[in-house]
Amino acid sequence: MEYNIDLKPYNTFGLNCKAKEFLRLRTEEDLDLLQSEYGKQTILFLGFGANVVFVDNEFGGLVAKLENKGIDVKEEDKNFCSVEVEAGQTWDDFVDWACERGLSGVENLAGIPSSVGAAPVQNIGAYGMEVKDSITYVVVFDLKENKFITIKNEECNFAYRNSIFKYQEGNLLIWKVGFCLSKNFTPNINYKALEEKIKKENIVSLTPKLIAQKVREIRNEKLPNFKVLGNVGSFFKNPVIEKHQYELLKKDYKDIVAFDSGEKKKISAAWLIEQCGYKGKRIGNIGMHDRQALVMVNYGGASGEDVLHLAHQIQKNVKEKFNIDLNIEAHII
Image (tube, rainbow, N blue to C red; front, side, top):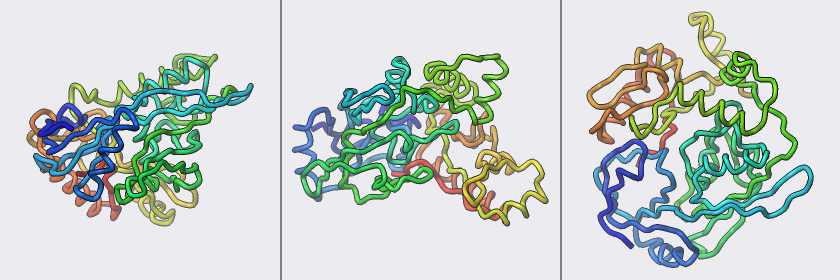
């Protein structure tokens, strides 16, 4: 156990916050101490720290950081490879591991700053792919029951940026994640930016590794490096609205950016924010990125309160202009 640890190096937004108590989880033996603290104080599970916003200058409970690593091939045949990955493994390292072996299922998710354990929490997705489509199970340690439990994919209730892990009562710690990766590669290039890049570069022979490379190039062109400008990637969710509401908006805004989402329409949150004049707008030490309106950035010295103030201001303006509720994707602590 460590005490009064600065959390700034452990969150990609670069916000100042201290943890009263801090525990690194590397082996199953470390879970004994964690379990002994359950019920005594608030516990925050921390992975890569790429989706958290610390509002206060101190977290009064225990921060448990996942640092267990490893990738284990459990079973394979000529078509598939089943692997089990430790929750503390860096997500992008796992993507590279899969792509180097010609395994597909996670290549479009390259470049996402995350730990493997955090991936199923909000069902990370990008460039036409969601992690739920390759996850087979999630192994959690139940602090309340003091035992490991395996939760199958269909029991995770995966949805757009959501799962049972996102709003659970804090007793389920993701320890390992099982994936089924394919040896029969079918490129997923339906996402417009990816499709255009491949056509522009006249690429005819695609591999998982090449797709991952192109995805990273697109991300680097659009998104700021959190090591230079602190951020948590997409700050808001793309709102999903009824088609009749979309048709009404379409009459007034011919260029509205939207995607089919079952019987509904998913509206580009970046488009909504840009229409309200926030793309590239800076207020003090905080602002929305000039190349991607969906990404809030810390220009240095911003506080969690600064983040929430701008977020609430944007939500208010989007609601007033479009009658659409814009929900925050980041985890507010």
